[in-house]
Image (cartoon, rainbow, N blue to C red; front, side, top):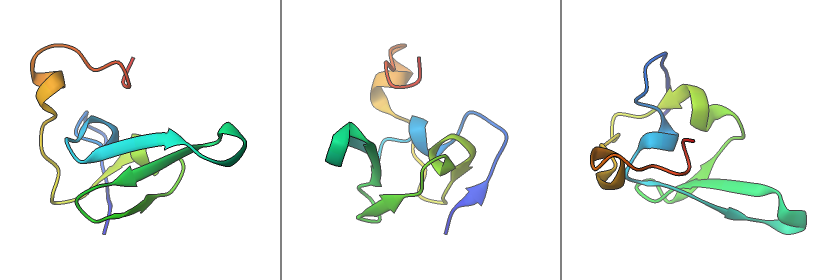
Amino acid sequence: MLLKTRIRKVCMTCHWFSYHAGVNCIPVFTCQLHQGLIAHGEHLTSRCQGWTDDRTRQQGWAPEVA
């Protein structure tokens, strides 16, 4: 489902990307579009065909990317 990419259009910059602290404060990355987990590291190098630009990033602020 995820496609490898070398551009900034990766899961982490997608409107559907979400994360929270899981057990023992280990981050859990999820895709709200597919209602599933994203493997650790894949959020930095992959995207899917449902990728959409994050509205906050369009406005110039994306703290999760910093």
